[in-house]
Image 1: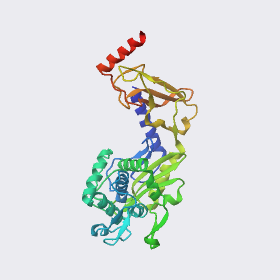
Image 2: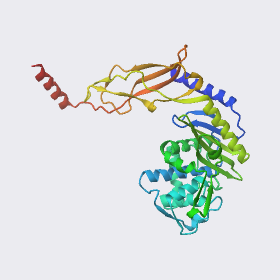
Image 3: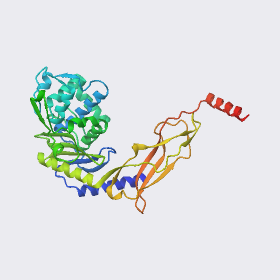
Length: 375
């Protein structure tokens, strides 16, 4: 019943938020990065062409390849004839020209270079076709059920579609787990080839919006003007997605409207238990107790109007029986606000360690030891 009430409250809050925000784009979404909470949504599951916002997934797979050791920022990438044939936004790579992964990431992030995006894709998977298979597999893993990728760039292709919701999911995965991408997405102006190739970011929010951290623009004749925009203020990062904006200026205006709404109305609070969490007794375990920890790191997204007078109530199991797995539920920390005690969050308390069940021989030896000590 509590979960049902919380869900209804969330729906009502979202509906109220939708009425309070006016964006012209047919599809839009605002998400808080840390918790993944949706603060605003409009036609968020309609499948539309994303244009170069597609490259969020390309960048995600590139950063994951770096983290796994498959390549490094210093790895030299050789441009193929296929990569050089992309057209659209590009830095005019020549066949067999070499650049580092670092340089190609910069070009892909700042000027949406299609040639560099495909060169990176080929470096990672051997071919763009194989890379697209990885893109679609990763999309499934992230729950991007509205998405089918046909290429690594977002250039027009039949059946190449996603949604505002799915763009937010992959954008969150990128900025949450690969913060180093900021060193590229926050660049306003730079250059390559020893200063011969000038770069100016296609995302003007980087220059003109306080706290902007990226992320990716996109536009084609059919997709019109798309954007995934990220910004951070006071430790809270928001993701604003705009699809099929009528003009370039309008997509930025819509994104700013969403970001302003989020920063004005919400705050990210770190919940710390007022008193240390007591260990929970474990029956038949290899150790006598298990230590509970806050789930989700204790991050709590709140409406600013509800941040005063927060109170905590801890509910823990009296005991649990082994085996205890890491992350097993042990209780909850309930956060209430105001004199009425409105519940604003229930943060799970989870097992912070694994406690195996004692074996017969361990129990036998334990019993002998206790008997020996008793004598």
